[in-house]
Length: 614
Image (cartoon, rainbow, N blue to C red):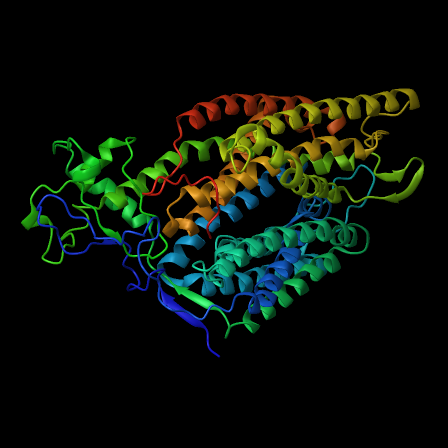
């Protein structure tokens, strides 16, 4: 058996991303491909491929499961590693992690382009797995080799020794490989798994839906194991063992992925679909002085798309300035004898114009989600520090002490419990109430998630106020100083409500957001759609880093500021209230954008808000 390979989604030569028209009609001003009467959203027959579906899933899902176990197990406790082993201050460690997380997510854009232009999904995921493994091995060395990290603190009032330039260089090198690996894996693994099923058959479509369910199930398992077992080993046994376990899991992930090499369907790179967007912009600018047609829906240059799975889009009224890109000014100079544009940078099809409009409509919603994710950026930084300065014992007076990083499991647990309840109970009730198959729209679900995010920040501020007040009271009644009584008597499990609210927020917003991008982007841009979610996460990490830096500098620094090194001396609660207020302002902007937004439709009038297509 050998792997099946297809050049593009519709069998056209790799690199050809434009629309392929049929011969021109008798009317020299209108060119439209003749399509079968029974064709609605699918524009051409796809080539025969040997889809092996579930036979490939042990390798694909196994690879993804162990990759998530490794990557999440490595990243979940980095805040404690940087502060306790590399002796960074809380603010420096938070800013470093925001930069690391942001760059990791932003690298997915580069990975998506590399996949579409040169490598294809199989090679991109494979290279990403190897790069991640190398990064994890280097990170393990930073913990295992004494010369690659600072010496332990001497104790007392003597300050801890910081990391040397060489030690920081090795740490950064590990992060670079992990970032490069994530850039290859994250935008392509979902799409690569879906590639293994035939989307033209009922069994293939059911297989794709089941694959998505298994994907999120394994993600949940990975978060649970990483946030408990692996973090416990890192915090209570050994850092190098705690990093070696994820590295070993990543090695298993690589082995499983390449073991299925002969079974996979591999979609060859077509070239970046965003080139078509740039062509539309250039053509519209070059024809900016051309008179707009009276009936653009009928008179614009229309063609058949190269891909067999791309929906034919009808004309829409928004962004009408782009319509001029599809206006034929002079037939002989712009269209060849076969009906193709002679210069694709001067004449585009109406399909290309409408695909560009789809992207432009999505962008305002995407921008509001960047601000929304700032609240989530705190779960791996200041929430961990809150847990560190709280009583983390399972029962009052002693018992097992939960590692601070393990509290990041609660948002995922809330999401895991809520999704089946929502699917089985809430959706049927909302369906009867609204008459919509999915109960409420994707944008409505995203708005609910934003409200819950602001509520979570309000709870966070109130819980932090109580934690700090109890710590101050304990220091006062015991006659000690706050600096010597850093741990508050408040149980760290008071953090669970705010984390659960964030998990519910994620269930509404992030899940719907991923679905939104997949449905509303043209089908030939789904890799870009996948990277859009991660690029939004990246920019939110950078925004969080900027916010931390501004608040830290303007409120008094490490001793008396809001984000003081000792949380008992700071006002982290005010920082949470600030994020909540910013979130509410962002919600108002989102509601305006959502009211303006128009969902993508196919040429048969079917609204793309009912089913997810791979």
